[in-house]
Length: 370
Length: 68
Image 1 (cartoon, one colour):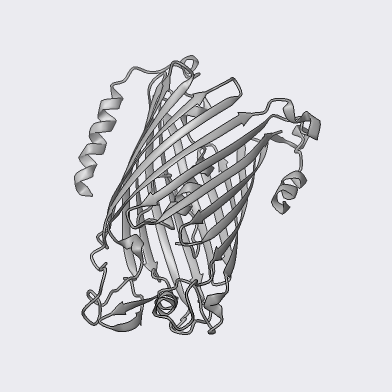
Image 2: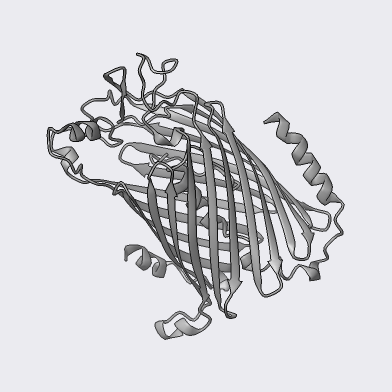
């Protein structure tokens, strides 16, 4: 409700003030998974153009709820759950209460004649993140080919909260990112996008609250301090005669921890009426484990000193199915005082993987063009 | 990863031979159903990164957070 009110407070920017094509949007995202974790995300975004420059501003508020442990106190199940928890536990009562965490982030980007630059900041109780970005794109061959490149540098400060069985030492994480993307218009109804990205991550990269059973002992999780991540992706968009389109995308990822993955997705978009669009999608994901991932660590010191309780570094496959409805309301919202063109969206996605993990993601949004 | 570079160059070379599309022929390409909004792609990347061991594909690095 607060976010919707904020959207209404955004100024209906007058063209006489020099702003062109301003928009404002609010999106609510609900995530819930089989482990009982719930995330509510509120996204408030505004864009405008002024004297040829583009402006983008977004505020995001996330509220994450980790559920209380559902096991009898003192039982082996409770001990295991507390040991491997990825949340701080400072007292004996903590694990039997929901743990709630809030995060606020702001991102601002300006673009001008193909150049763009931005700044991002995020604040939560144990993590402070900042990032600067810069990029450039240019059209060639009569704007049938667009080449873009961008880089970003982020520096994060991590100060773990008090936890009974992990050291909680303050730490940092730095990430350098670079990408290059080519977008080619192949025919009047086909476009192809090809890109590659590199990330060099340095600093704390394991969960500061999680322990792992190693050779019968309970030790803090430990990942390497450096990670080189690379991916290559391609997307093909094809317009089909009956006012529909097919979007195909593929991404190959690898890093120096040994993780290797493939993700392939397909979307079908269809105009049902001039104002209503349905979208169906499917995504398949498969991943090979990192070199130091083990289901059970039987030797002290893990694998070369590294040990993890993070299933995301193991072998698994995942499916995602979903649908989205997009409604261009036209003048229908004049009755509630919105005379500008508006767009309502609603989507539902179901995600499940081979680790018996599943999640539901529901999203709804309102976009207004002034 | 070095073995992937020739594939990139081949794809670019293949598409380089395509006939130029004139501005007045790009009506369908400008339709919103042809591409996903960048914000939508970044929102999805954020929660998928928190559930999978890989990242990328949205054409930009999402900002840092404790969720990763």
